[in-house]
Image (cartoon, rainbow, N blue to C red; front, side, top):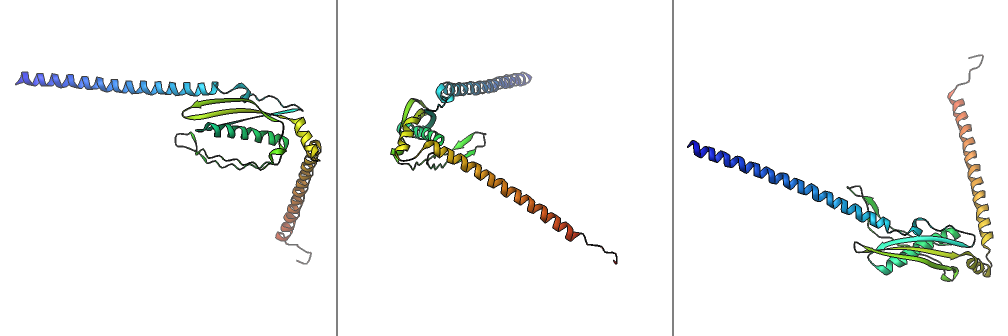
Length: 223
């Protein structure tokens, strides 16, 4: 009886050791797997960053005769990515020229529970400009990447200011005059804003004095 008990005890002990060893190996394997996946993800992100063209991170400097702008887009459709990236770059050029371009963007972004920014990817930009009003724009460089089923496009555009100026002058518009008029308008608006702020401040002081006089009763000699 005692011998049977000892055998059973030893068998149970050995089984416990084996199970503990298996559990330990399972945890180690899981930790190792997670670490390898993390390192893989870091490498992927690093490769993506390394693949960003230098001219996108350091846009060529503008000159009196040439303007530059970059744009990027990421979608699952190559043509749409190309169009979107170019359109985004055109907005940069338009901003530099103060052209009458209206943008309509609709994008829903929020922070997920894991701290990452989540976007629904809905981004629409509409341009209301006669194509003949924009001349001298050319694509200098394009770079396309394919990652995780999506096309990432980087675009660099150049605008020949002289061609744009000639086109505007042909319509009786002087680019320099437009810039001067805008600068004057900005100064005038700022002066008006400061004048209104000063007037509001003076009115507040007068109102404070009036309230103080009402709150403090006058005392005469006969009181």
